Length: 182
Image 1 (cartoon, rainbow, N blue to C red):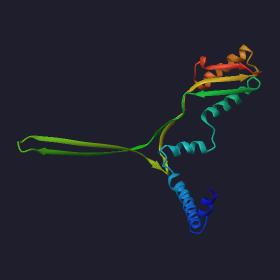
Image 2: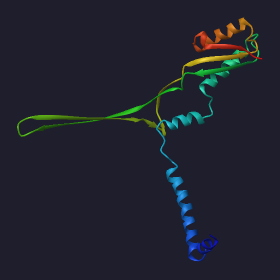
Image 3: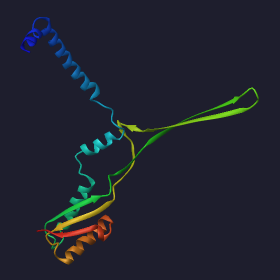
Image 4: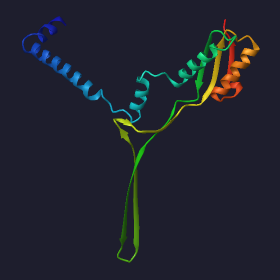
C-alpha cells in the first residue's frame, strides 16, 4: 500500500492530483453559486417580508394588548395570555388574466365542416416593486384564549376576564379559559 502511495505522489502524478483537487474546489464553488439560488415561489418574498420586518405576529399582538388591559383591572394582578389562531392570514394577491383564443374552421372534400376553438387562459401575479401586489389581507380567526392570572381563583374576576375577552375578540365563552396563577 505504501509503495502505491509513493508512486502516486511522484512527478506528474502529484501535479495531476493537485490540478484535479483545484478543479474540484472550483466546481464545488461554482455549483453552489449556480444551483444554490433556486427560484422561489411568487408568494415567498411576501412571507419573508412579513417575517423579517420585526413586527410581532398577530397572535402575539393580541396577547400583549390583552395582558396590558387585564393588568389594569382590579384584583387581576399579574397575568399571562395565550391566543391560538385558526390559521395564518388570508391574503388575496392581484392577478392579471391573459386570454388567448383562436378558432379554426375546416372543410373536407365531401362538404363537411369542422370548427375547433382553442382557449388558453394564463393567470399571472401582479408584481409591484419586486413584491406581489396585495389586494386584501384578513387576519385569522381566534380559536381560543387561555388567561393565567393571579386573581384567577375569584369567580368575579374570572367572569370579568371572560366577558372582556369575548367583547374584544368576538368569540364564544367556551373558547376562553381562565386559570389561577400559582
